[in-house]
Image (cartoon, rainbow over all chains, first blue to last red):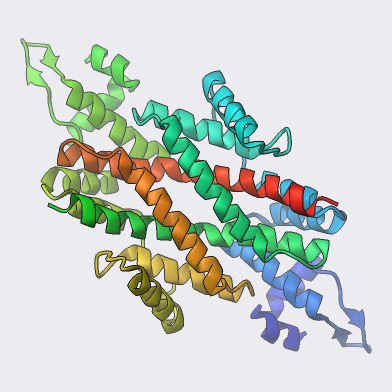
Length: 200
Length: 200
């Protein structure tokens, strides 16, 4: 276990806690006081830590995501199930107008998310908030953002391969961990453009 | 004031609170118990509410951003100042390797953010977290993300015009309010791609 702690960068008491909570499968017995851990344990530990420390998820949510990954043989379905847990319902349901706008966008692009996609609801709620702030997004801007999002998603999924569990873990953690990269890049690009175009 | 409350969708007690706190300038006196409010008051109220409700900022942070907007005649500088307040320093300083990687990226693209840009630090910290999770971003992926961020920033700034204060308010609030739109679009695109490419 001390070797597992070293290789995963996780303290032994934390590993014991995850074992007790059933988040980490036990190692194969290799004597009275020793267990054998394999590379899958290291991967699983990294995944748990990323979900807790980066995504800020509670342990019960981490357990749900791990269950979706473990139970699924269909990678696309597992990614959808995990994403749903990461996009909670907005405090107010979106307006019918915003929902129609999102439905039209998905239909135009031939995007086929899960019928109950929480992201479609989150998108409609975000459009409502822009309207409320007097900053309604034009159809042109929304289409350009959707184009950019499509390219980003292609990059996201380019590296996904391997077993269903590994691919799903990669996609889920990658989605979360890459978000701050994208937001920082956008702000850097904005500041540069603002300086060039607007600097007085 | 009741008209202002109605037009801005903000309750009267909240408006009085913002007036007392100096976030909202007083209206022009129009009699003993009446004040005249103009369109700028409605805009300012919408901006304050967006910063509080969407960005989740504290009132002292909102005051700092409003001061940057009001004090600035240089729109690019005001945008940079406001953004810095929105990107707090990461809990751990990024590694030298990640900082060099970010410096190389900025230099290759000719991106010229403020020398002390908090976004460059945030980007380096985000790259470190990916490394720690065993999901190091390839140079290809980072370049593709930067391309997409550049296109998004062009869309962001396309609608920015008018006075320095209006342009800055638009850019700052737009940055924050559009983030959930982009993240939701990315997840929708991911789910669609995952279903098409990986669905078993």
